Length: 220
Image 1: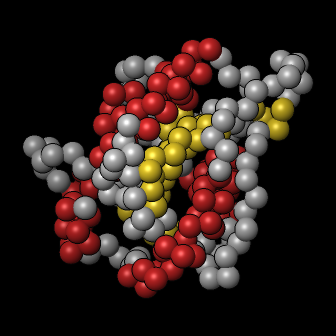
Image 2: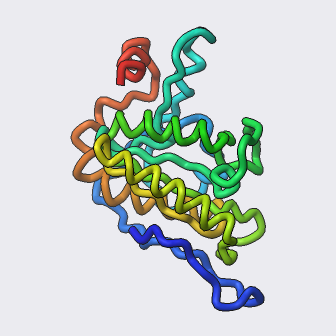
Image 3: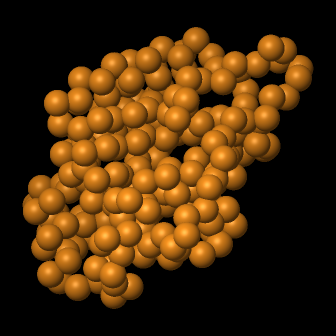
């Protein structure tokens, strides 16, 4: 996947946000998604991959006492090998930002430091971690020119991610546009990696969450 930010030739000419082609697999994918992921993103995901089965899980922190160590997980678990983290450009650029969740927010907001910590922790759980940094365009699926502040914040985070290669391969992808373009990127990633990596474990993913599953998630 091309992780380079999209630039616009003219500020007055809208540029359609770039996204890869979704090649549907022969067998319907079954993946785990965090309950913090926006329903608008998930609805578009179901349109791109109509047969997909989404197993929703609440964050592990909701199962634990306040004194328990914080456990970070991928927002979308494609397979044991591949996880996807979602964030927005404003979350990389600003610190701190309030943690909130709603119809106008793709994922729960995280400060830069907290998101870096989460990225490092999630990288320990997978051999491949893909971080999708959304422009979070609420008005259209076009890509706005990336500002100098955004470019600097993205470059700093890419440098941080590169330093994690001893733990996992961490790929940072800037996603222009809004919910639909983000969902198309997620769909393409799932369809690329799930057939070989996730299909063998498909039958182990159950709609009902068990205490044994929660224990295994906590220990990684």
